[in-house]
Amino acid sequence: MMSITKQWVFHILTATVITVGVNASGGTLDSPAAPDNSSAAMYTLSDLYQRLEDGTAGSKRAGSFVQPGGTPSSGTMYTLDQIMNSMPALSGSGAQPGDILAGKTFWGLAAGFWGEQTGTMATRALSADSTTVQAGYYAATDLAAVDPDLAANNIATNVTLFGIAGCAETNSGGGSAYPAPVGKTGQTTVYRTGDDGSLQMGVEGPDPRFTILSDTVFQDNLTGLMWTRNSAPVGMQNWLAQVTYCNDLSYGGYDDWRMPNIKEMMSIVALGRYNPALASGIPFSNYKTSSYFTSSYHSGRSDERMTVTLVNGIIGYGRWYQNAYVWPVRGGD
Image (cartoon, rainbow, N blue to C red):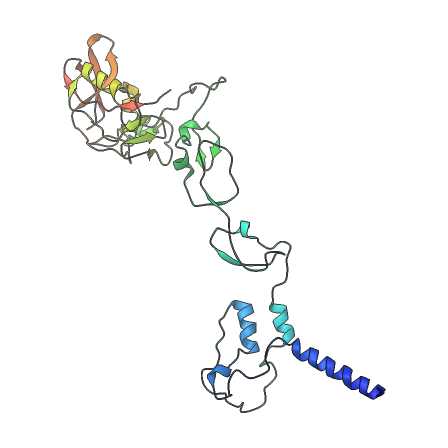
């Protein structure tokens, strides 16, 4: 029987280690192509470093390998330490897919979410029916559009909600405003010290004064009243017919329209303006120069009703059987 010496044992172990090392390698040691072939090109350490630093895409050589003309100088090559220091590391505070908008890609640093990830955060919309704001992504919006009730006349004086300063005073029971805010007349011309144009008393209107709620309806943010955008949705009729028309009107999604009283009609008049004498920015159409009926009557003449001429804002009177226009209104509680 052949004996095995220590020298043979050493050779056998050495051969085994070499074989295992070759079998455990990450890939072939053969060159992908000859040096004069562009397929043999590889990214440089500088390419790797810049990719990590600012995302710059590296570029391989396109032609044959060119022998360097001299030795590298100090600082012309990044070290492995520099490259390692540029690499991101695991972070417990790293973003996860639920933190990023759905469909957006990002590089995750959190354990279990390492590498390129895709966000899953939902896109949500605010609701006027709930105070709950769910976690998620919200597109830019106007809260007044989410809930038209977010208006100055619905917010108490000296209270500001989401940038809207309130102008409504409420009584202890939370009912009608006491005192009711009276808007400025709009008259600015001064004829004598102490007159309307000189003092310009009254509540300064909110900005914006008017909000367009639809193609057919707008709201006065000073009074809270809602008006039809068509200032004369029906032709001239007598007072009785116009009252009936307003009471039966279903328009813009509402069926509680009515004829405005004289104070409501005058609330949109601006005495400093002419033809029409209406507040600036009022979003209306179909302007008429003839008189408009109101629901208020002449206390001394039971057959006369108060009217307003929108050309100049003059208050007048018309008998109930005469014809005039009407501008429907709703609200005013």
